[in-house]
Length: 100
Image 1 (cartoon, rainbow, N blue to C red):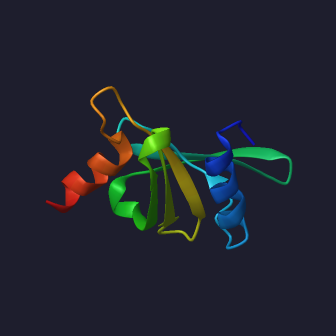
Image 2: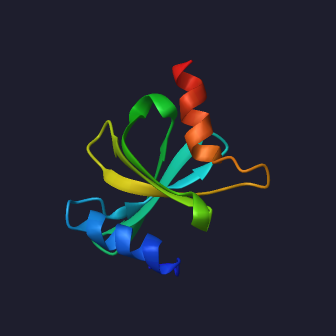
């Protein structure tokens, strides 16, 4: 696991007990999942319509958020969103803008 601050690591460990084991990367409006299956690296690319947000855990004092999600093909995972210089969370803002 990548090194995060203790509160984020604790939340990730807790979520893994519920099946949220994949760390998705958010890039250019897409969620990217890299995982290994039978010693092969698999990369999946998802757009917003293929993902449902399950929960958001904000740690504003730490400048981070953990967002759980499920994809349309059943992958459970999370995104670590980092607060930008304007105090906004890019991933959360992107998905909230789609709802408007």
